[in-house]
Figure (spheres, rainbow, N blue to C red):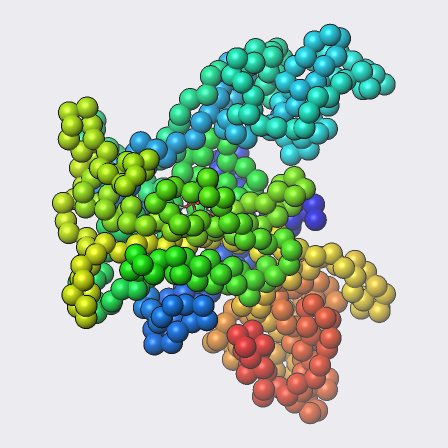
Length: 536
Ligand code: GAP
């Protein structure tokens, strides 16, 4: 699938718009249009329902060591600045960046890709950030060496494509930056903190300085005690939150994949340390199955376990659920969700002061004065098991998913081009968004075949009955084949057509978006039938 086609459909049909488009847009920010808002709401609601509100506290899920409870939270975006000092974001939430002294462009160090090439006795590292990277590299190398198209074979390429962070900084004088005209314009890599600073009230300077949260997780950790004390919840239990997060990404790109404002769906699952490896496995598999059940069932979705040398020493496992987004080079995958075993790192950091993630066993990081570099809350965030009387700091398993990345993956997976017969029975190509019915923005379209003979009246009555249950669309305009096509592009799984026969025998046709099969069902059964097909 070509990404441009999806981007164009998203704009044309109202899934996604660039933020502030009439002012030229704002890089890294996206608005969801009328269809997109329903799609993303459905993704969030499916997650909340499956993970939280419909969770059975009494049953043991397949693969789970025991039953467990789930609670929800909705925390503020701006939190006490100390939260981010203890969580590590203040010191460690950085990306390395490089600037180009000539073009004044800023790049993420690990996202500039390039390749060594020699011509006219000179070897350079030519770089690109373009999507069509091979073509761009070739074009720029030819330009640099002043070669004509017919002399392309004079370029001697050396080694595979790699990223700028893999070459020695001492070789930067041979690097040809993406929008530069001369060599050696990259600066040395520097740290760039991704948190968005803001100011609270009228306080000037450090006193009023706060941050927009870069993840929803910390709101859950700092409320751990509140949840335990205000409910009768017992370990093991999970706390879920869906909400906006903000990261000042250096190079937001690939549609909504890397945005500066996005939504996360996170669970912090608190369990006894001895059981945490089993709970980690449970969550890893449960979360993978959730994405698959909602339609990412093919080979484009993978579960990638981190290698032992990628893990922090206090973690027994981390896995990423990744999707082969069409804008990525062949064989590469982008993260949809991470499932991490975090041990007791977070609760202890908020109790004792920021822990040094490299210390083993974990110890509070000390400043130059020998005192904790970032003071914790001093609150007791341990848990006492009232049955065994054991007191311990729970270990945490964190399944952390992106609602926008998830929505983007569903859009990419759904986009299909096939053929379907038009009004005259002639096969025509069609674009169809094959969303799982649960997440489809519109569940059914109600179409009177013609605008007369009492058909609109019957159709409107059916529309009102269905609309009480879920989003449906009434369309009486134009040829019915054209109306089907519009619904196919919107991803509406069912079209219900009211025709002449309806007035005789009170039946209607139900057309399935994917199989194109049309069956006659009783008008009186239509609401129940659509509900059954959508929600099972
Ligand atoms: N609390 C853990 C945490 O925040 P993360 O891997 O940084 O972990 C979790 O983020 C998820 O949030 C990612 O898997 C991704 O789906 C989403 N996400 C992170 N940064 C994003 C961005 N700039 N744009 C869109 N989604 C993003």
